[in-house]
Amino acid sequence: MNHKELAHDRLADHYDEVINHYDTNRRIEVLIDEFWAGVDLHGKLVLDAGCGAGHGTKRLLERGARVIAFDLGMNMVKTTRRKYPCLPTVGSVTCLPFAENTFQFIFSTEVIEHTPDPLLAIQEMLRVLKPDGHLVLSTPNWLWQLPVRAASMLRLRPFDGLENFVKPKELSAAAKQAGGIIQQHRGIHLLPFQLTFLQALNRRMDDFGAVLLPFMINQCIHVIKASGKEPPHSLR
Image (cartoon, rainbow, N blue to C red; front, top):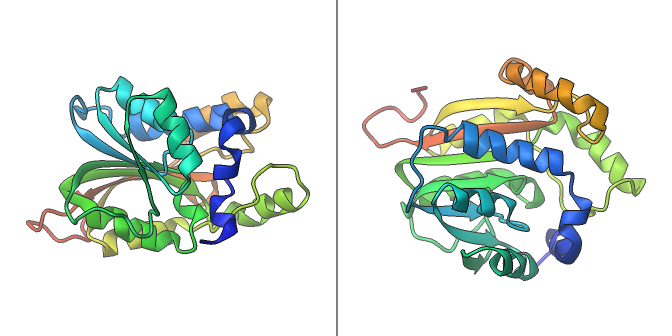
């Protein structure tokens, strides 16, 4: 396994100290609270694909879900299991150890870009998703790849792992090719969210996330797997 793929796992013991909580909470708010606003998760099994330190797992449990906390890093999985009552599993999102059509719900935030092949991860998630099942996912926008890498080189951020950002068109095309029907695809964070004085403005600009998607730092997508009763490339 590539040493860089486990970069976040090495931060597990103090992960909450190095992340930006506004960013983390905003992504969870959009993916779970907004995209799944009318979805009943009570008693449902949800795959948290790339659980990290468990922030998404926590919110899913609050919504009544049963959660499989899945991550490449053993330390991350142990950290999440220690904090929350979940089903811990270790593995890669580019080769999920589950059968086809296993899950009705999959949640994944800021994960696929830390793999050698982000679009393969999308394909895998849709493979294990049941027909009519829901996938919500966030990942950075390719437009911001260079600034992020420059910040890492200057040691302005603690992350030194794989970071392969994808373009919004690539993400939506990969989801459609794998049998997904796009429900929503929009951006968040038009401006650097690390600057606290910009956060209120960022939140207001998030209302225009669909139009501003090509320019925003993160992209959030909600996909339903085609049931076979309709063309997989159409929009519902």
